[in-house]
Amino acid sequence: MELFKHTVHALHGMLVKKDISAVELAKSVFARTDAVEPQIHSYITETREHALAQATAVDAKIMRGEAIAPLAGIPGALKDNICTKGIKTTCASKILANFVPPYNATVVDKLAAQDAVLTGKANCDEFAMGGSTENSGFFVTHNPWDTERVPGGSSGGSATSVAAGQAIWALGSDTGGSIRQPAAYCGNVGLKPTYGRVSRYGLVAYASSLDQLGPITRDVTDSALVLNAIAGYDVKDSTSINAETPDYTKALVQDVKGLKIGLPKEYFGAGIQPEVAAAIKQAIDQLTAMGAEVKEVSLPHTEYALPAYYLIAPAEASSNLARYDGVGFGHRAPGNDIIEMYKKTRSEGFGPEVKRRIMLGTYALSSGYYDAYYLKALQVRTLVKQDFDKAFAEVDILITPTAPTTAFKIGELSDPLAMYLQDICTIPINLAGLPGISIPCGFVAGLPVGMQIIGKPLAEATIIQAAYAFEQANDYHTRFAPLGEV
Image 1 (cartoon, rainbow, N blue to C red):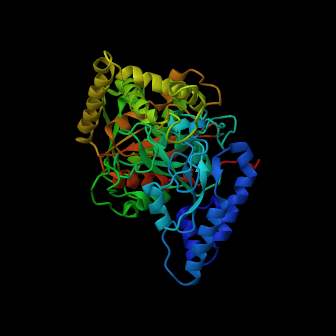
Image 2 (image 1 turned 30 degrees about the vertical axis):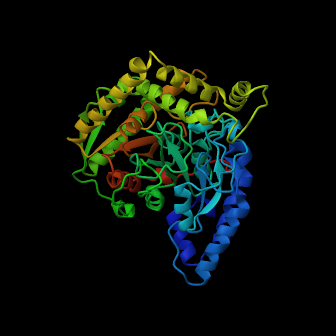
Image 3 (image 1 turned 120 degrees about the horizontal axis):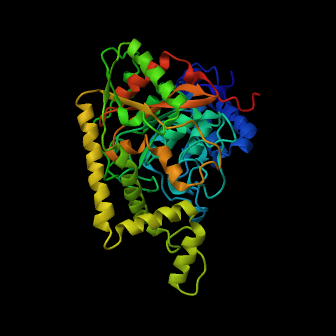
């Protein structure tokens, strides 16, 4: 089998045994990218010279007999809203088309400490605003399982890079489902950690109280390995949790006996594609047969989570994106005075979806509407979190669909409200700051279906164990998108 189809842990074993070299692995991934990138469009910026230099350094370590870290020499991609020193970070926006950060995000430094190899910066919805990667300021990314369909978003390029063999692992950011939903659409494992578990320093902010970085990988073991590399307290991030970080690979246990699983009834009603619901039910039956206990629970404020999110997130976005005015950095349009320069810069630099959310957020924060909209949304957020707290008093994990449907066709959801509804299963988890993982649990008409496992705060190990036990009883994670093979 081609090297680009292997997992992180399998490739690590090959490197340690000197069956392959890191340079050989990098070149295999580059060759795959050359073959499929014209159909997929995963990358905004490729970093091949940088990657080969990193791979060469890893090979030198191996030749000297030095121990290497689990990610050493393994090629991976970063969503293009993660700052990389000396490498363009565009947020898929024309306003930052030529921005080169003077510093690394904390996760980038942590990955460098493991000698991970960076293949490039992956396409995404502009400033991570969207659920399909159709809102990139540069180009649309295509799903490797069906190139006429979206890969999900906003971390669509990260998901496709892994699904198409253009990277072995990737990092995405998740504000309302932007790791888990594209992972579901592309047949990957996508993990959103507890808010604050992974440093946000160097992640270009969309909605600061919701954003979280996490891995997109081939299987659950790889997810645990990448999370081990990036998790931990960071003094540079005021929202970082100062708590001990466990070794998540110790949760890779094939045992769910006695595990109490809650099924929120609100997640299995109208709007869920029947075939998706059937795949989730089949997965739950399998977990029950393996010894898990299942009961129905209720999260009664779920219906209010979506409107609350689309007040809170745009409000924070309107504040965070105020800095892009053509003065300090990024695109600047000429103007007769500073006000005209501001207006022209932002009009030219931002795409329609970003403008839509800035306007929504500014309106929600404006005088006379703050209490009626933004404050009310924050109160609803508290109720959503309380729903989860009550449910977790009875169960260990919750299971839901990751997305209400399989991947839809490019251009099919032109109505923004219809697009927003695709995040209905993932948004409440961000509002509550909880960890969630999406794993493949079946296929509908050749398209992957994702199952979401939600845990208590800082209970990443619990959801990883449940995901691993299910994964090991199936072969869904071993299937590879047929791109270029038919």
